Image (cartoon, rainbow, N blue to C red):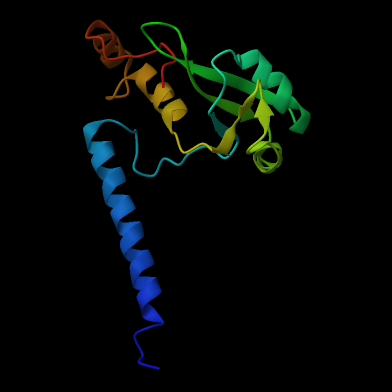
Length: 156
């Protein structure tokens, strides 16, 4: 044994974590996320490759067999209102989210084979943050809205 092989995976993992932390800090400085420590929610699924005809209500009914669905949002084009063929499904419990992930990935909905993954988006957290503004006050939020910076159109 050369003595280096056992530390190499740890060094690569530490470098990967440091790079992720640096990227998050840049996003925080740019105002894209509230805090570099924000993490995606554990009770939300990202669903893609949807049929354009699939609606949020349909997803809520389909996914509710795994537990209580608190919200389902099909993301739409802001200009046309057409489905972008992906959605987010929010559950009340993390266990329901996991069960839906394992059972629904590669399932057939409206003649389309969908893909399901755990949400990596912190947009829901960002939306709460933007209602108070980057400075954390209502005046900043009002300024952002007047400047066109406060998106509330549901478009991703």
